[in-house]
Image 1 (cartoon, rainbow, N blue to C red):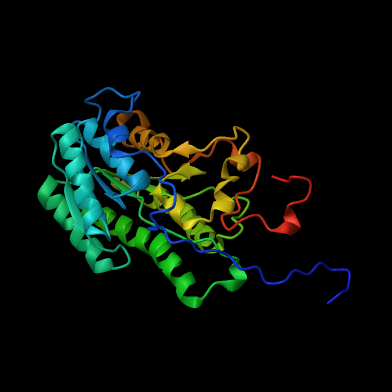
Image 2 (spheres, rainbow, N blue to C red; image 1 turned 135 degrees about the vertical axis):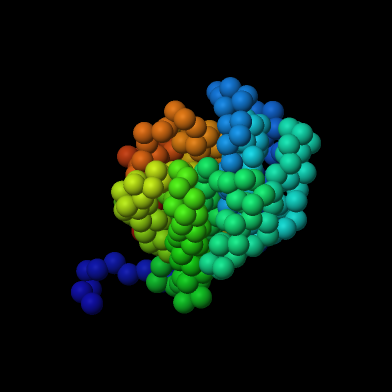
Length: 308
């Protein structure tokens, strides 16, 4: 190696325990989700059947609350039954509406097929599938374990595909229109310390753009939503060092919240978006034009002169 090239010692990266009770609580609580003002009329989604994966927390939970408040028939799934049950009970208390819940993993294609069938049987069909389930952890790519890489790819890319393929097959078989909304990220400039999810989300974006054309004859639309720094319970996997500067990565210098994303999902699910297909809606406060999020903490090499 050329002696003039900079070198850096291996940098340990914290992997906080999200369940640590000493860490600050973040995101919108259930009282806020039940009462927060919305721009939409109360019956906008009346009769609309929507399935949201990862609906027991974060952006998925906010979308489930808002959809139910607007009259939709809602189904949610996730791996943690207790989170799903708590969300169901809170939505029932806030709206008087019941929702369908199912504990499962989207990594299992048979479970995805069974869930799509159950939603059709219980709700009488499906109009919008929101692929929100996913996850990642902050780490330098060179240090990924094989297990860690496969876990993120299998959930964020493969799991999303199993769900959208099963939904599309059912819509095609029944001759019914449908709509898929895939939650991704803005990956145009890469995602340092999150290369695994960058690879997966990029795959979903271009998969979505491809099948948006293939599936148009079946009246199936496919779109993506790319959130930036959205403050939710998911912040629990990031070290405080990183969280303290997340908002500096966009020119507005603020964090978004789950309601910002929920209202975008409702717009895409509504009749107002009937001509939106193959699109990527970015909700990041302008981050794509401004800075870089370092979810594991900014390395010293890049932190010269207060660089964003």
